[in-house]
Image: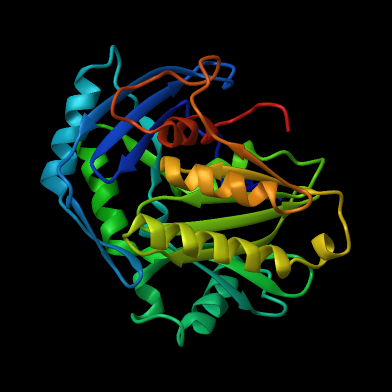
Length: 304
């Protein structure tokens, strides 16, 4: 499945990425195959707070000042943009719903009803989107508290930018996956969260998200354990699907080494690490290649 099916309008050429300590702006080339420009503005750690349902609070003053500083450096301010947020800002949940009503409003109400026992807040307090996984009545639901996201939208609107879409890193990067060839597993690891997305035959088949500890050695152990468990739970890999292509998105060098070493011991596993690519993305001091790839992926129209 192409996650772009979530969209209701063509994605803009402009995008922003919210980082732990900054925001990054990017503009794609007209053909959408590379970044034409990138800018970054630092933010102090703690400019946003996390809670049990993802992002809990955003410092509007700090974010607004950073967004305005970036926009002032541009020849022309974008009027419409996409925002990529850390995976920790959202929750990825898989639920069994059976057959949903055809009307979107009724279907969403049914989804919210199923979420009542899973959320520490009222279901009407979250913003969500969803898509089916497989053919067994299972849904992948992406959700976050509505109020903090509304605050972010209002802050960008005050700077003259309308955010047409807000999506987590793992969803943005999934656009880089091929719709054919080997089964693929996107592994996105940041300082707080592990998110994995398994795609076969162009459709999302499995999604997992897990908070990880702060110590690097513990984080590596958690990621490797979850990765092994994920592979063991995928039936078509057990049956021999001709190998697995793993796209690894992380800025932690130790994590890259750990997963590449793990792949060397795992039959059929092939790890591709997202790194700086001069032909596609512009090098930007103090910014991770993952942020730049995320910007490119928001409107990616490359070969799939």
